[in-house]
Amino acid sequence: MSSVSQTPTAGSPRELARRFVSVPSAVIALVVFILFCIIGFGAPLIAPQNPYDLRQVDILDSLMPPGSQSYTGLTYWLGTDGQGRDMLSAMLYGIRISLIVGLLSGFLALVVGTFVGLIAAYRRGWVDTLLMRIVDLQLSFPTILVALILLVILGRGVDKIIFALVVVQWAYFARTVRGVALVEGAREYVDAARGLRLGGMRILFRHILPNCLPTILVVATVQMAMAISLEATLSFLGLGLPPTRPSLGLLIANGFDYLQSGRYWISVLPGIVLLGIIISANVLGDRLRDILNPRL
Image (tube, rainbow, N blue to C red; front, side):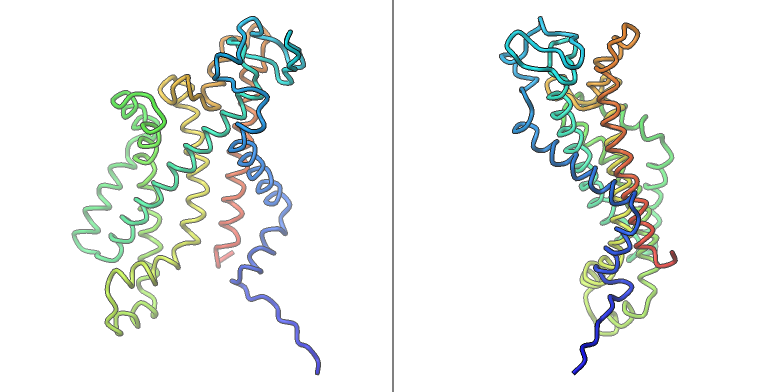
């Protein structure tokens, strides 16, 4: 008997993975982003010191250039900042905070926006009109302005900035999910489900939502990069995270005053890391959009 080799279908996970790895830039972006996640969440295990433990920081080691060595024998491969903190350790902890804020705020905004978009698309009528006018009102204001106002009112803190990022991001998910859900709601399988007298919530979350997931995944990837960028901007302006839990944005702000004196490493190195995280996430989002869009 001759064996017949089965080729993967166009929409199978195997075929999608093959199309994804066919673009080297997408593979590099995925590897870079996973690497950032590993070193960020593993910062307490791999960092040479805890840069926010005053018992491990010596002010006499402040503003040392990359490759310098302290009197205790610790080598500062990326130099130190104005407080004597090891920049390598500070950047590892900063990556951790930035990823936590970006991933958590993006996930919460996805949940809120997806629920609002699905309800608006399924109920139609005045419910759709009311929800979409709220979305239009939210999107009419500049994102950075809304986040600044919220943080001025709420104050600084990880929970506060996550809340502010969710408020400014959920409308993007709601608008996108509503558009996709309207298209899916007009298809034959939804009419068949209604003909079988299935409940509205079951049709919404068991039939329409799974077919919206590819688009939601693409938007989530892009919005996660935007959340990390926005958090860094707010922290740079002094309204983001507190000094005890600084992200990459606050590290860049701490070294901004030293740029003209030639101590570039305090701001430039965290800026390069932040740029790498944002670019890798955006490249992943672009590639996911290409392989999950049936028209492409």
